[in-house]
Image: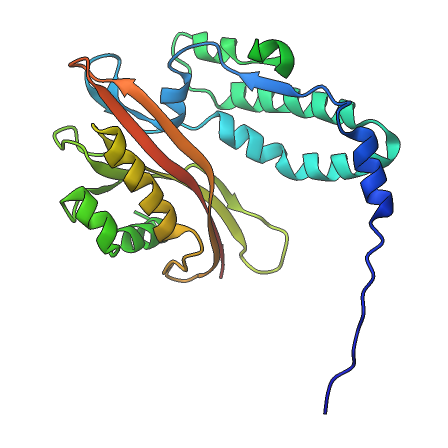
Length: 125
Length: 133
């Protein structure tokens, strides 16, 4: 005996409208470090300290992103209806910056101090 | 090596395509390869994540960077893709847990200059591993 037939109609017009109104208006942010060895700390290397010493990975940037992923998704969903998406982007960028600074291995402090937020447009030029 | 790392090691070391590229079935290391071992090799280690604490169970969400290191760009590229083929969508054997999702996420790809001035290539992926007790 066949089961009940269910038909779903997804009304995505409102979502499409919200995305269209937001797209292109947000100023993306970049969180970056300013030292050349940041990536080597993040992923580990073969030639540590320039002396051929293997160093294991000490991730500091990706965990900082991971830590805010949930709240970002939640806040962005809410912001699409309130028009405050840029605030969410800005706050998230600074949250990632703070988290990365907290997790960065401390050497001379140069790596930690170099982690910063920048406008993506200016950063890429 | 914890149970997740044992599961990762088990999957990687059982992959015949990876072992064929490495030319050595033991060239897979947890966290750090011995200083005396020459590339190519694969190294993986804990990245980040932990207990989710969102359910009465023991749901956990980890990310492990898994990367190949080699002196040749082509070799490392091949191994990087084989890591994805091996682990993306795989069900790892994690004692005491059920691995219900394993997926390759962010790509790892960079190079450094070795002590002898020659390039050393790194390629792999962040592997998200979700388990429940």
